[in-house]
Image 1 (cartoon, rainbow, N blue to C red):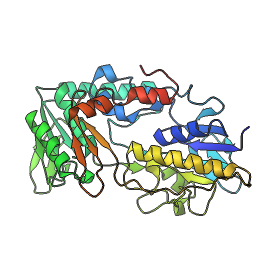
Image 2: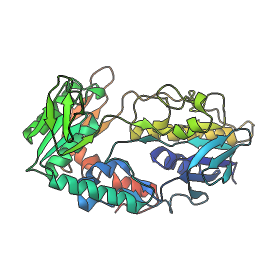
Image 3: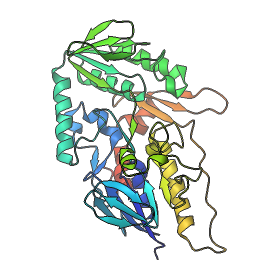
Image 4: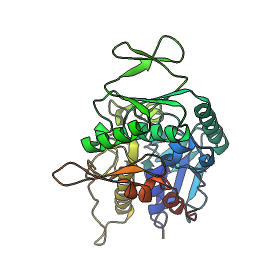
Length: 368
């Protein structure tokens, strides 16, 4: 028995999780512009290593048993008629709509185009550029910048690799000074030049980059790992500017509902529920939203469950790979600094496979 129509807009980590959780109890329609799920966690390695080119792409066809996946682009949500409007003009009726359009990441962690073929071609271009570069500059010393620098170094031991970070320490957003020191030690031991307190911008000449002190660096290839942008322009253009905060994230209440709309939820990187934009936080939000959506759809009665409140995740385990055979794991410690574990835990949990088997199982495929 199905309790209602749920339209999930966006087929990333949070969207897939919500859709799967509700598949047995609602008529679920998942809308995504891509033809496959994009396992972004594997994208940095895929942008460097040809043998990983197709790894990040997992078909949607086994995700839902009762629901369906529609390839298309949402352009607005008609809350009066309870319909999600697609760019083709098609309207999808909903009892509950879920905004899960995620965020836009810098390349190579971006799905370029709308088809697997276009994205693979983009990866191939990055791989070729890395293979032929004499000097690669990575800007940004957060988890992605550190991981990408390590991948490039291992793929190109003969090239010059520079990591420039605007902050005083690597991984400073994690709150763990020890993690930053271990990342710095690994990179420097592998001849990666690390520049701290170095805010970089493009220079006047092509292939040059200038820091805040006026120092100019020449590099024939650069990658910018300096943050993400929420994919909410379509909401702004679709008449829902008031749903967004100044940074462009969807404003939600503690039940992850868009403020003022009890049947419109927003989960993952797209909302303002937490500043920690990582996959575990997105999955936790998806699970809570699925519970609250079931509660909303069920008829009032003695067995109806009360909705749950979301508690923002400020501290969560974080793994930063240094290639497939090394890395660090940060574990939250109540009342203290994160514990930092050695490479064995990181390799087993993430570095070697980049969680690809786990995500394949989530989408109904075998782990390999």
